[in-house]
Image (cartoon, rainbow, N blue to C red; front, side):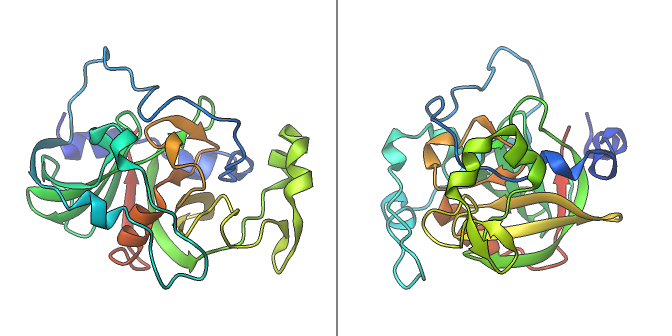
Length: 240
């Protein structure tokens, strides 16, 4: 399916989906090893072809100095290589600077130029919490506080024990225990804040799975890398 026709089929559920589904909870009790929920039996067209280049993973996934909170070394050797950062041949036609999220493959693309993109592994919404559509990054924050919506707390009352007073309400202050990790990019549609974010995580082992409450989570080293390249106003396309 061409990119243009794929866009025409994208659901406009950003406006219709209740923001109460979002919340980016990171308080899971564990999950499959990286990529454990990927259904390889389902035929589909990939957005990327061959790998163009890979960074030195021992460098890019090392601990980060100079951050307000520790960014721990990511044990990339335990990860499925499909979810490690790499530059790939890009088969879509989106403009350079666009972020494209493919929930089916648990991968996010930052389009570098025609025919080339940086690909990252991501964790996406579990069943009943996924979403698709087009948005823009309207706000970005480093080490943000996490304030769950009341609907999320009602679904999982155990969250209450993790919450303290923050400037935005009861939540988890930005830092090493915040489910939003080292960076967050807030997605807005024409109707306003979608409630969904691209953000870091305290649970890097969940990258490559359907685990979140709809948000798109990344290894902290990867979300810092994307954050540096995706300013406010960046278009984000989440495929259905």
